[in-house]
Length: 423
Image (cartoon, rainbow, N blue to C red; front, side, top):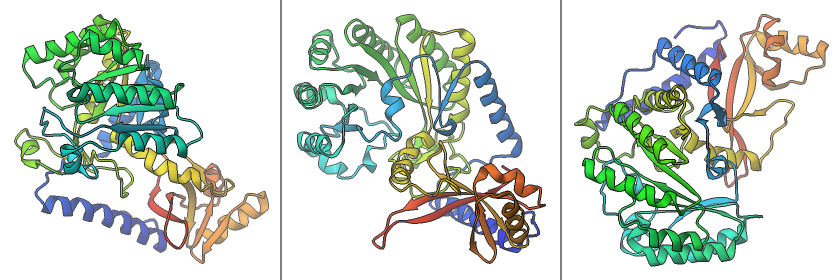
């Protein structure tokens, strides 16, 4: 690692690099395969793709973790940072057995395969907790394995939060017009189908048939599925087919390894993105680790949809987008001094830092300009990222610190998670 000539800064850059390396090494010791570390050329290629997407009219949310064009479900907009949005399940029973399913990571998984969750009580507590219920989802397991309970859930939600947007997730097996009408009558606003391209052609056609039925009854019809590397051509064909059916949109999910059944991933030649996270943290989302190649495939499909002029809405929801909400919810509860900290779209607080010999020089320059700054210790000065250029005029090497507020028994405190230079 190149040195900056600032010993304290170099020490901390080395510490964060070592933490990231130790994280990957620990997983590799368990037999999990990682792709080679991302190169500068690969990062530049991705940045160029994002620039092209922006020029073609794509929209970016949550620090670029969400990229979309055309129709975007209001539930997707509310997914990050909206305290009035929550997803429930009746139970976790499913007939599919997908090797990439992350439900086994759910709390009380085995129990809720055997018996139902307290979905009525859970929803009622949610209504009591929040100022307004805006969005409610029902997932599984497979909700269509218990149609009567699914209809009861929809009715209960509609009674308790009649203004809420309600959506249902399903693989589509057993879906028919009669169920669709009953669900819509109980307040269903949106349905999302999962399509598995590695199943038989007949199975895929059956799901497309269910989608066609839903299109005539349910207000908004979508597909939501992970994009598996190697299936790009089949995905392009699927996008065309969905567009021809008049489907509102598709959510392309970054394909993830849920920390179990690695043998199934290995035999298909998959490896984990390296680094798996731009900011390392104890993320709680059950999806776990991103598979290398899925991010590029998702962005490529989004660009394909734009180039083809498809009317279908296409939304890339990355693993980072799933993880942001956990951090953002906490950071919004604890506003930091906005003269120094900026809460970014990635969910983290950003603050600029200089170290060692730069501290006195920058503090003196800022004092003359009336720019607020704060000494953390003898070797560190922090200030708002907007003042980076002014600090660089003093010859300083400016680092950007990414932080979150950490809750503890002793009270909340600011925890630094990453330190970057050259941003």
